Figure (cartoon, rainbow, N blue to C red):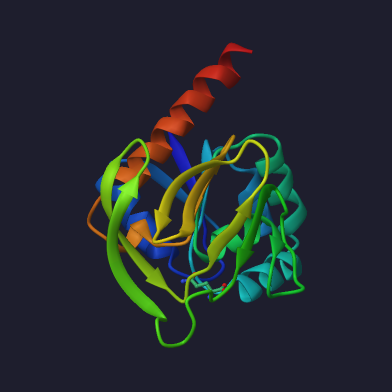
Length: 196
Ligand code: GLN
């Protein structure tokens, strides 16, 4: 199994470290040609969605990456990555891939509560640590979107077909279970796509 980590901006190095810990091979996506390597899943890291979106367009990576996601390649998106996937952004006019039918609010916890750490239940995994950094939350979800975690009344993790997206940063904690959950999605995808 090979996982591609988008590495144009943000905390991609932390995702790579997590993959190494799990013994999973990874490649970096830094330029257009990198999108034509062999890989079985993609990680969209946290960072700054506006910068990532702009770079993806400047580097001419945007459309190919969107097509891969639309085609069903498993994606794990954290924080800014969630914003890139979202259909709608409540407090921003910019839109990116629009492959995930949710409305998000950027920097939703305000300046005061810019960063915080909590533990909450994640459906199918159990209680996990959650680190939020100038995080968005999910205001509403469309048909077929499964809610996996909440922080107080707000939705902070969802799954929609091949897309697993969350407001917080599992790559910044020691707990490996979210990445393992994603690996299972990738294995499942490999089984079904190879049996077709
Ligand atoms: N605030 C950032 C954005 O809007 C996301 C923060 C993060 O990824 N930690 O893109």
